[in-house]
Image 1 (spheres, one colour):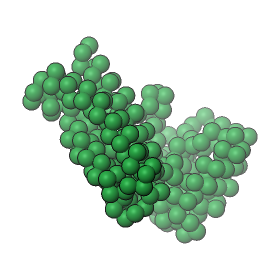
Image 2 (cartoon, helix red, strand yellow):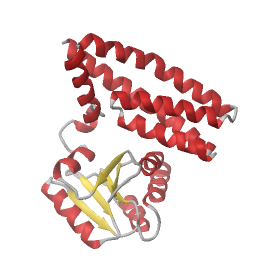
Image 3 (cartoon, rainbow, N blue to C red):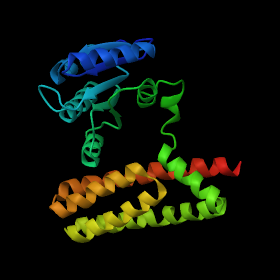
Length: 252
């Protein structure tokens, strides 16, 4: 099994030499040890040879897409019994569909260029205790909650949280029922309604997933719609935890 490193070990996978060097310099400033490879094939070999805490993956590699590499990496480490490193996408831009497809490939974090030290530190969970603490309240969600609280009071926001906690799973079950019967048009409308609720709350990730689910239904892409339904369920669960933590903080 690969030997652990005392410093955060980050593998940079990018076909562009300039981008690799820039990312390396940022990470050295954060006290990391870096490995640099230009292709997905070399990255898969590097993961076998050595333990990495995280892998920065350019989405347009010369030999394969970053998402395909991530899928192969996950399969490889799973079969070998190694812990899965944190997977972070590197991109110049990202549509909602690209971000959802990244998540389906196992890439939960998404970094846009130009890179920044705070952005890398957050995406890689380099702050002490960050990985163990799990996902924190998203900035847009936090801003929305605080704005509603300041405008209408805590009770109003707490009531909205209760409504979301009740209606979210109900809507998700309805979508699942429509997908099971092949009724994509109705499933798409339900995705759209859930997207509206997510937008009102500032739940950016749920909004993104529902948008792609709605589009997939309109395109007749049942497989992607089912994937979005599954991701929406995961995201609702994470959103419930974040909202619970925020509510507890407001009642202390």
